[in-house]
Length: 161
Image (cartoon, rainbow, N blue to C red; front, side, top):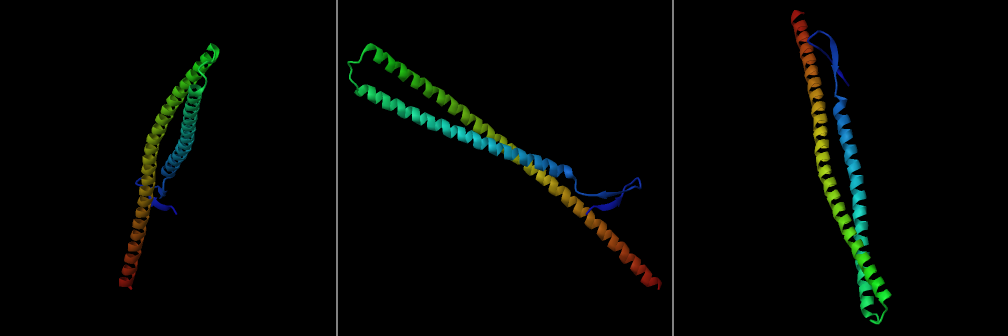
């Protein structure tokens, strides 16, 4: 409930909690929600990349073992195909490792942004609470002043009678 008060220029106004701090706090919370969603998405991508890396490693090992156990009397064409396939697997493995490193760096960046956003949210929450407390303090002071004035009026009326 807003409380009316007189300004220095003589006009009457009301003191109430400012909406700007709670709006800024809401924005900070929205940013945190978005960062959490981005982090979850980035973590899912990292998990997928790690799973791909494991499948590539397994495929490479299986193919390498199969090639080593196979008859060494293969033709030149088969040997070239085998080397080319193994080379492609190694290239894919390197690419997946680069993507994993990029994904980990992105997750670190998101974590840092989350810390900053959380600090901003706490700051806005504190400002909102401080403003609310200031309005409450002002309201209490005005009420106390009104009660004091009423008490003095009653005292003066009782003395006069």
